[in-house]
Image (cartoon, rainbow, N blue to C red; front, side):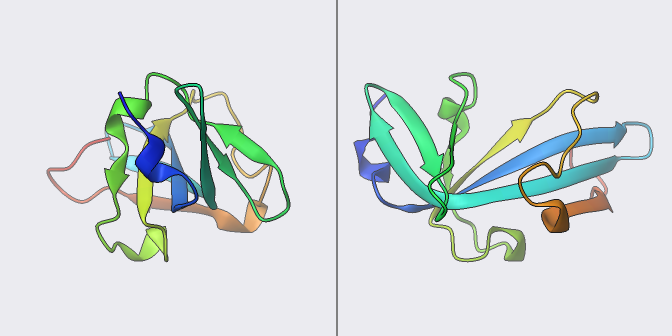
Length: 107
């Protein structure tokens, strides 16, 4: 896969944690920054210089922004499902959102 077109683009990583699958309750947190591509890896670098390397399993799911308010001004995004034991909010506790998924949609 080629990712060079992402270089320098505004990017949003949406971390998704399933809280209750039966009730479609999820927790979301966004990490926003600019994409940096090197050696087939895509890293999202925040304005403060800290970065997050997108896992290889998520790379095929990178999409152009669909204009969803959650993505803000990002040009591209990816959803990364996290383990239920991981506590979201480490890099920005204010950015954690809990909501119920829309009927008929799934993670």
